[in-house]
Image 1 (cartoon, one colour):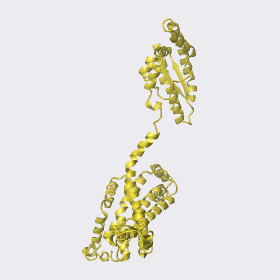
Image 2 (spheres, rainbow, N blue to C red; image 1 turned 45 degrees about the horizontal axis):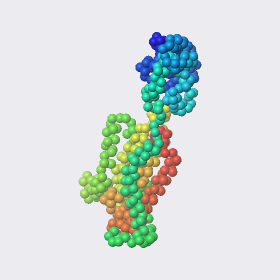
Image 3 (cartoon, helix red, strand yellow; image 1 turned 30 degrees about the vertical axis):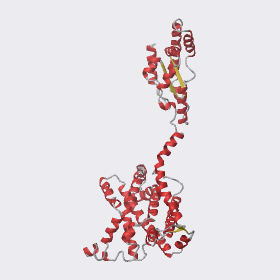
Image 4 (cartoon, one colour; image 1 turned 60 degrees about the horizontal axis):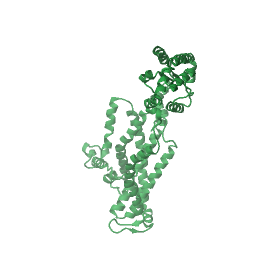
Length: 445
């Protein structure tokens, strides 16, 4: 018996296994003890190994007949009948429940592959042990089966509730510092309040006062002017620097750190520094005797807008450069290699491969840039104070002057609501311009 079993096990190890074949849930030691083996074969492999299966079946029937003749007088009646019955049949036609469930899982995960055919070759020694132990062997097989065979991970209400609990702190923070203040500002826009006395409901009085003020339209125009020009300056420069830094070069890593330094500085410190450098009497122009830099940069309305856009771009280009650098590094190199084979140069690769593939990154960066332009306050307040005159007064600065300098909290709340609505509309517009897809094919963002 031991020799026959060794021959069969050698044939099993020599036979190629199908990709769909499942691992034997019984370890080698347990298989040797119970004298059994389970093979999962698909249709193609079964045809190739037909001779091996017939030899195993004949060997099993012959051995079962010899064992039944020897053990009729030694085994209990039920065990002897069980041994003779399996000696006649040669193999089982049904699988244990746990193995049948595993087989169904494999078929479901591989719907295009033909369903595997299970062949169970059982030797009489295993049937003898099965007759003696009853259901204990089945319990042993079920315990030895890997956990993945028992069922798929649960994705029911328990998993969803765990994710919900993890998102609860962020939701509470948004409610406390985002939604509740927004509701408060919306309610204040229908009141009259000087910031000190009692709040009095006044209906649409604050809305009429704010919308009829010509300074609101001027502030809105200046805001859009700074937004548009800064986007036109920041986006091309950020893309070019991001593509340049995306190459894996040592010196480019140093440059990436160097370019990121302006983003680490505060807006107030940057404003004070540039204000001192651009002073026509004591600035860098007067110190080095450079006539071009001796102009009154912050006293001329046109030059003041240009200085604001330059300072904003200098501070925030590193942030958008980092976004584009990460996006370009995610693009597959095979696309550039294929284009080189077709004879495309660097410029053609940039316009035909890089730009189309980072389309959604451009939309994300533009959304951050445009919405962020609506909230510029500290940099403008320290650098120009809204001047000269009101040439650099944006909506955020107009809201501050109305609320905290003129003590008109109602109209200031109206301007705040307008800022929120304009930001939402611009973000939605940019999302529509990007199409309905949420990610590009190559970025995975």
